[in-house]
Length: 323
Image 1 (cartoon, rainbow, N blue to C red):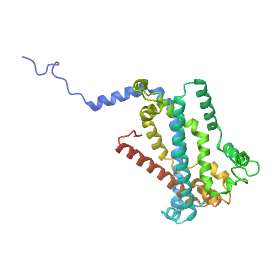
Image 2: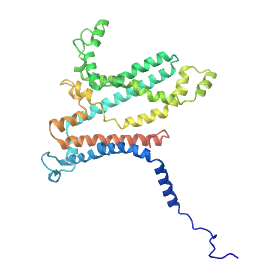
Image 3: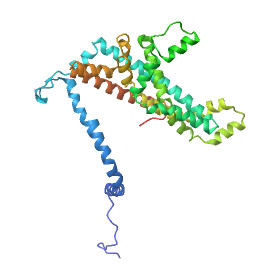
Image 4: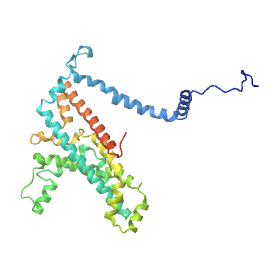
């Protein structure tokens, strides 16, 4: 007969929360070097991404630089309401969306087409040459690119006008940078020239993950190159395309700043001014800090909402998503 006080009796139940806590601390102790390496990046994000958000309070104040924070006059959502009553802001919103959509659409289409063509090239020398030539413009600053565009499209000695005149397509030089209907397309195609090679890297990487057996099976079934591209390559990179589109949705209101700012002039100002230029103009030149900050907040909030909406639509459709 066993003694009730026998030490061999059943032990007390183990607390699962305590076990999980100990396991987490063991994992963290093993990853301590990685954690220490990530500290500078975390501090960078905090200092340069989160601390500046304190400045958003200016959007709710009648901000005066010579007054302390406690002396500022709070005006609520006055500047946000005023944004949508100003014609100039509505024009900048329209221009930003228009340029972003054109650049994004052209960038996606050309990058996918170039990636597919490079994937089909069998001669490595030609493939490397095309990749190198298409990548190089990415490393040029937008200031240099803008200067090149201005010289190419110049009325007096621009190479584009010289070629068109020589071919007899036009009878007199075209003022490309003085006609409003050309400006958005100039921005879009310049973006393509600068970034198309760089954007193909992601799609070429996705194509390397496609099982070669699929191409071999298609070859046995008598499929040509076009049918292989349509039924194997494009479906294989579809998840990557969806992810890239979701990420781009969060930058619809982030139209390129440098190029429209440097190329704008009085004749095309109505189609060249973006939200970023509007913020610069009202914030620094006109010292209307509250209105400029409200415009910046509006842009970021809309970008976040578009990102969430695009991710939700992809999730509901059963496609790849960010979260």
